[in-house]
Length: 301
Image (cartoon, rainbow, N blue to C red; front, side):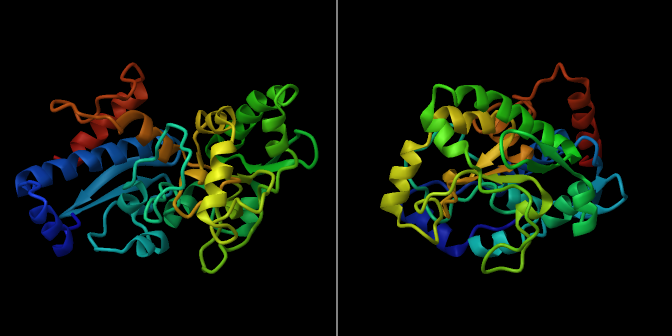
């Protein structure tokens, strides 16, 4: 469990905010961990086969046999979490489902942290292997290349099936959807040595505008652009488990990325307040989800 910083404790004392007891803190951490593990299992049902606890370390177990650590227990800055996130770091911030009309704080980037061990297991780790998994979706010109693993291509296809008919009468949507700037592109993120999600074929950039990216634009122009973005367009992507870069402090307004774990955690647990059941909010009529809950409970006894 990552400890509270001295600065944060002083802040709580200064403003007379009660400091959570250690027992409550441990309980909250355990609930958060279980919820994170559950959304990961729901999001990657064909890839995550179990949960394992060894001493104080918890892992998800992939079908390849690889174990991915949930929490490395290291205190990190925001930038360090982006550069080297464990699963807990990746899921720490709750993605806001409601449409925003403002630029978020620079320390708020839900979905921008990516665990590459997980991405490599699900979508493949080499350029050659990734490209073998790409399929073409035909919606005008050019084709959209997207990864077929974990139904990423199906989710983009369903999104476009919702949006394309709207374009006939919605110039605000068609002017952003066409022409898209691209999907698959094997490259690193500018200024880093980390692969872009476009390298895995799980992201799409829509029509570019000079106000779209935090390195190109100022916050005033970006805020105007964000407020103009059609709510129906954003929701169509989010309904199919894509996060929108317009909800990041390091805004990337034209960018949508297939990240089911981020969206499902937001939908199921943003407003969680049940003292009895840590899994309250998920669809319990789904037998697979019941099985995942049992796996997590048994592993973390």
